[in-house]
Image (tube, rainbow, N blue to C red; front, side):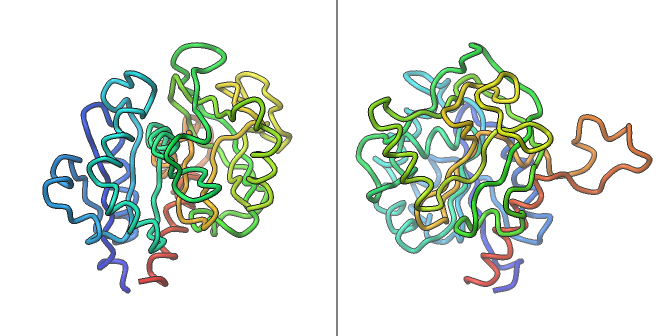
Length: 272
């Protein structure tokens, strides 16, 4: 399929943000990216007309109850059948920040035993409580499974910003060891917070901006077609978005976030 024939659905509800930036990133590769209100998608029940789904960042429904919880329940209650078909056909789903929270709450990640009725993980309140907005370094940990990182060298370091109050990835304490082994054995660990030189943050703030278990910043499902991450790649797509580009002799054309969108674009062009 040609890139201009690929359709990307970027969902929005009250409180979402960066949907326009995400749309621009996909359009930069010639794909048809559309920002669609959740209610419209529910009315039309046409999710399967799209090749990929994106749940962007923000504070959907005010993040009441827990971040992403309300939208996750609405998503599965109103679109559950179509979501399950979408997943079974291995059509890519990307959850950014609040979108990651939604995927966790909906049981779409980590999916150790298929879509789960109850969350298998959580994204809790930051250890340094409050909203944390900063640029961080990420180490790419996925060896080959995740379709969103095929253009990223294994164990390379990326710089992408975070902006959240509830990004602390965790498992139930009694399941930490078991579930971490599953992530590693299934090649589901995608990004970890780190130093600029690639050394892991080991929970050190602000390198690990939220206190995430094992410095986890992003994971995928066992198929590698669903990715959730707390950092915002759409905010690190163009070189002019970088916080220190004026220190360079020439402005970089792109930031590290481009590689995520480029990876899924190539995957979709081959698949469909």
